[in-house]
Amino acid sequence: MNETHALHGAPKSRCTFAIISHPDAGKTTMTEKILWFGSVIREAGMVKSKHGNFAKSDWMELEKERGISVSSSVLSFEYKNRALHLLDTPGHKDFSEDTYRTLTAVESCMMMIDSAKGVEAQTIKLMDVCRMRATPIVTFMNKYDRDALDPYALLENVETILHIHCTPMTWPIGDGVDFKGVYDIVHKQIYMFDEETDPRTPHILQAHDLDAPEVVAYVGDTLLEKLKHDLEMVSELLPPFDRDDFLAGMLTPVFFGSALHNFGVKEVIDFITDYSPGPKPRLATLFPYTPEAPTKEISPEDPTFSGFVFKIQANMDKRHRDRVAFMRVISGRFKRGQRIFNTREQKEIKVTTPLIFQARDREITEEAFPGDIIGLTGRYAIGDTFTEGELLKFSGIPSFAPEIFVKVNLKDPMKAKQLEKGLRQLAEEGTVQLFTRHTFNEKILGAVGMLQFEVVKYRLEDEYNVLGDYTPYPFIGMRWVKFTDEKQQDKFIQDNSNNIVYDLKGRPCFAVRSEWDLKLVQDKNATVEFFKNSDYL
Ligand code: G4P
Image 1 (spheres, helix red, strand yellow):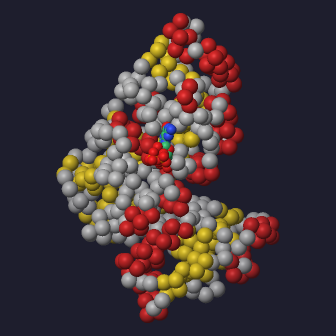
Image 2: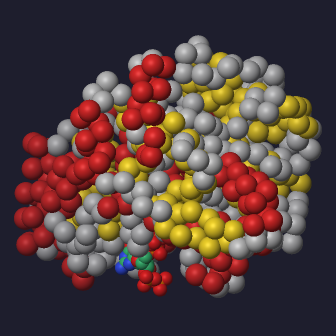
Image 3: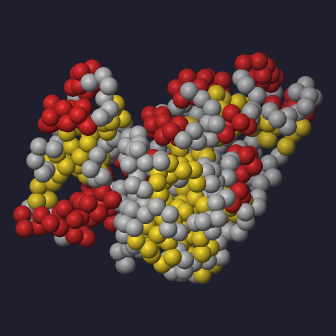
């Protein structure tokens, strides 16, 4: 482990972002190109190579066996005088809860779409999460080197399904074998598609006059007619780029290209670097953190340090069986050796080895600023807030409703205590959600994907020496419930006792057995509110 200094600069220079996409749209390929532009890797193909697996982690045996990426990590690098933090998110849908939580720690997102397919299921879910914080989105229509849908149809598809306005910044000329490149709508020039060109300096054809002989010669009559027609439609029907609408998450600038060929990638990274917001203020609840407790906005300019944990990664270094809690700095300046206060446990810790992550390396950092991500080793919980002593808790790091459920039956009943301890710790880390039935003290695990349960099984055996059988439980969803008063709460719980469970924090939830069941209860209890995530406080 090397010692290094943090990426220097004023807080506004931080750009903390993530890529959202449906599996196979090209996120790993794009990550690799971004790292190449950020000079983190020197050769294309390194991210997925067997020897240098940068973007995908291979820390856990399970990941190796399955050949999938369970974990997300942080990739930090400098680009155009900004410190970029790309928060990598697991591609596999079974770990999407991890991705949802990571999205609570970013200031903007790049959305990648497979241009042959348009908007796909996972992207819809991820956009819903982005919308919770009105996160600005930059869109990249990928794989134009292959046959693609018509660009206008793609934009309509995004607008209709994702309910966000689109403003194309570039426009594709042809697709597949006829792909000629993209027209830069703002600068009125064509970036020529040529696999041999250095992506940093694409061949540019000035195209202020689309009838200029060199433009006609390069594009060809048929594609030129289509380009002119498309550009006319765009200028008449689509809104021009508006920075405020972008920052409000209402409008997405759209770029076209091919991540595989590193074409159009530079434009989209440049855009993110130039336009993505720096660290924003964040709302916190003051002690005792109840729904009635007062809230306070913490600004990145506040001189006192604060931050929160959005992700916990176990077994990053298998030899040490360690846990790294990824903490996003919200305000103040963090210095190595500083004493910070965990407001959940109300306990002070001294951070002697704060980590930062640069591709495959983790290094000790001397300082960190708002927008930075630092790794703390030790046992913490998702959502833990750290301050210089002020008792507050950042909001906006919810639990998301699980979709599948199991019950653990112990093979050795003497291990009940270890099981309870293991499950609680894994739930605090966000590996799985743990619920307790109202009617009797039975523990139910909730997850978004089956593989989450496999991780739990593996880790309970490996770390807690607990063997169990995992039997499916007949719930299909979960809703956090909010009542107008205690009397209503008591009656609701009494009437629905078989469906009532409590989450890790003791909040009552309604376990859904069928959509019909849910609808019936909602109709019967019109003033009770049902939430798909726990962030209703
Ligand atoms: P993901 O992380 O979003 O799941 O996607 P990934 O980057 O792994 O890309 C999925 C597949 O799509 C890969 O092919 C990748 O090479 C291909 N791909 C990504 N971007 C482009 C592009 O711009 N054009 C074309 N033609 N293909 C692209 P694969 O065959 O599944 O994997 P591999 O054997 O190439 O690694």
